Amino acid sequence: MMRRFVPRSGEMIDQRTFSARLERLREYLDQLRSIRASAREAFVADPILRAAGERYLHLALESALDIGNHIIAERGYPRPETYAAVLTVLADKGILPDSIYRDLDGMAAFRNLLVHDYARLDHGRIYDVLCQKYPVLEALFECYVRQLDDQSGE
Image 1 (cartoon, rainbow, N blue to C red):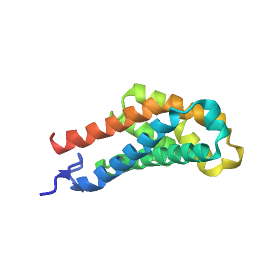
Image 2: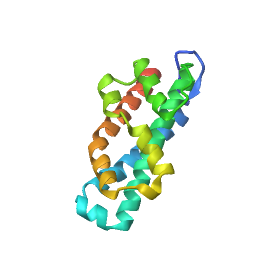
Image 3: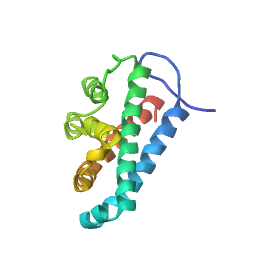
Image 4: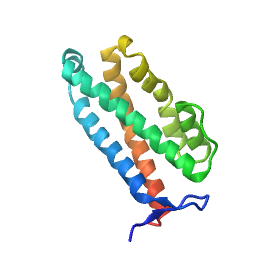
């Protein structure tokens, strides 16, 4: 029997959907962990490594924001108008601890840079952000896993 994620609003949510999104985020974080093991100089010099880092960072951010939106919608919280507001709603509702929220500051805007302003990307800056923000993305992933476990009664 498939367990269901039961949001506070009482609406039944298929846990499989939430779990699949978490699995994708886990995959992206695993790739980023591997990429961040490279030296900064190697990252900047290697176009394949740079492209992989940029793409997996984009996918991790996109996935994290998508999961956040999923939680917000399931629980009937106010719909955010921007990517940054997704994190704000989650923090305001106690889903994200303040420390994670603070450490994620600027990441929604960085996602927009990766997607829309790619001609101006500074490869060294991408490496720095990838290395600096990786731990908080891991913490966010764990926070989301706890949300799933709390709601499923584990």
